[in-house]
Length: 209
Image 1 (tube, rainbow, N blue to C red):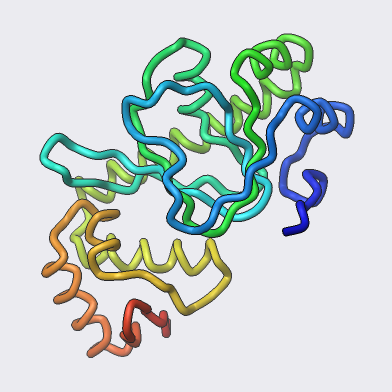
Image 2 (image 1 turned 45 degrees about the horizontal axis):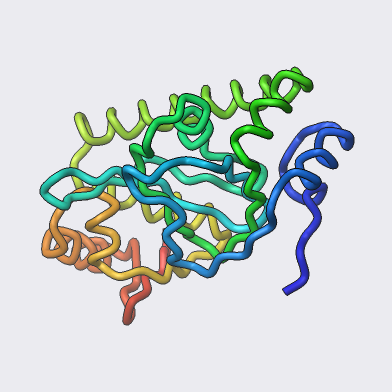
């Protein structure tokens, strides 16, 4: 597979800093569904997504999961950086949503570059702000929105992420990301289909509206 250039991603950094990132990073390609990080893993690298996307989840002791946010091309998982810099174990699980090309920047190199390039610190602060707003949206949705509203919002977010109206996913996976039961998701999807909002297929959902 041909590696795409970091300059072609949405990473808005100076050419000099981008060259440094390429010099110090390890390039990895991951297929969809790859688990990049589990909870309690030690964080040694700052992942910078060049192509594709990853989803960041939180798992409770009873096995229930909930989607926290997506990390897109040109972005990084700020929680990985903070955990790595403070030598803390991961508090999240990260999986590849779309086949991804990722630059893995060693945490010690990230620390050096932050000191040398103030623009990298500004970039990370902007990401932190964005992640904080997304987490507030999750809290708001869980606290104040019904599951059917959250389900439709998630489907629209996935369609926006891929640029496709057809979403390849199982009811079980949707239930995991919403932190609810599969039977609930199946019932709500059937209602959405009856209302002409989606069309259901085998392990896929077509968003019609």
